[in-house]
Amino acid sequence: MGNGGTFLGVADVTAALDTVLTAMRAAGADITYRLGGTSAALLQGVQLPVGDIDLLVARREEVDEFGAALASFPCLHAASWLPASSQYFARYEVHGVEVEMSTVERQVDSDAMECVGRGPWQHCVWIACGSHQVPAVRLELRLATELVRDRADRYEPLLDHMSAQGCDSDLLHRAMRGQGLSAERQRLVWDRLGHSAPTR
Image (tube, rainbow, N blue to C red):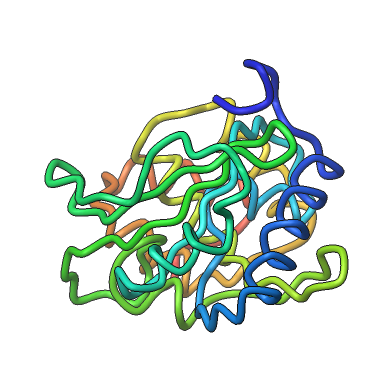
């Protein structure tokens, strides 16, 4: 976990991410990415534990470009292939924050998974972050990930936020179905959100 074992706040994430994106721009790195994980939810207004920053890309060359742009920062994990998770992955430390960039090279026939398939590329929101606009994966996809991982300290704040702010019920339905959540678990989510489950 980044930041010395403590959780990150919005200011920590914003400062580190702004530094990373400024360094990539200065290096001429032309990287198409998505911000995922808990830091994406934090920047969308959800108060939940955040340990690091996760950036998703489609091509391994972009992970290499990321590493080259951050060469002046401590490298915690040099870009390499992780067969267990089907990722080409690198991790750097920026202002005490762990920043990771990776591919996730598994094929799925779904538009509603957080890190694989079309989901992160089709379903994102743009958020101001320092001098940059950052594409963050939508909360519906993150919620399904946290539900399948059964991390209540993450999914409870997401449910609270989406209960108050609303959600795309069709997208959430596809995301939960794509993650293989039981019908009972899905009903509990809809009850919590004050929605009926979509019929299609």
